[in-house]
Image (cartoon, rainbow, N blue to C red; front, side):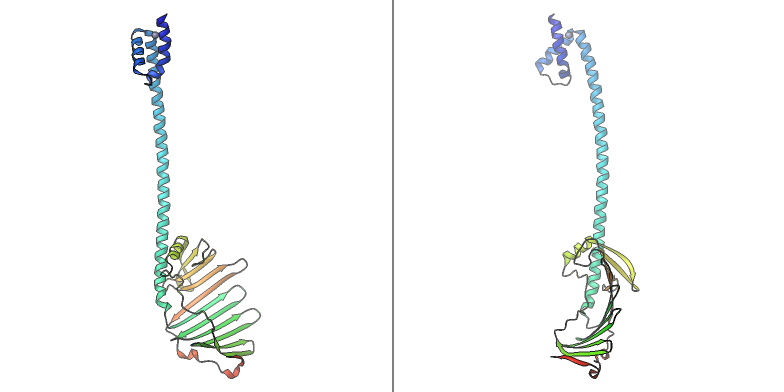
Length: 289
Ligand SMILES: [Zn+2]
């Protein structure tokens, strides 16, 4: 009876014994009993087999899971690495292109003999600005053509003052010796990286640059996928001459109309005759300073 009672206790303890969760005293008790009891030994032997089999199966499942998981992680890492590499290469390429164009344009910014022509077309009206500069003298011819009429303004700037000549249809008027006449006709480095390195870097990240032909020139078309006040905005494109780094065209896609501005730059072709003013007798003088 006592033996049978022990059997129950031993059989209850066996699972823990197999998993090595029992203390030494219990172990001795169990082992002593197993030596003498065939029934319990039989149960123990079967339990041990089951345990080994189950733990093998479990181990196998874990190994399989870890392998599958680490394989997925590897693929994810490779994809991430490729994305980072593409991003770095793209940004680097863009930055090199922008810096190189900026350096080229810098050579022209301080030119003292240039002709710059800007043609602005917004679908209905066209504005042409023709500017000639030589050794500090400046003349600018502005022509605005709308379906209704054509306006012409000629600005002769000599030092502080300017003479302005207006033509609308047959009407000709002039304003002489005007001060503070602003005409934006400098040669501009649109991609100035020297003075705005951060913007250039940001522009390199957010810009897409591709080679295109524009106005018979090999150009880079720079578009920006983020709205930015530097370089270009969303839906805008800037065409930069590969040879000079100067702007050839800019486009703006508005809600109703698309605006295209074309630029032509010429250097060291301006001669003095362009600065000869028209015959003042043909004009009615409307203002004098
Ligand atoms: Zn027993």
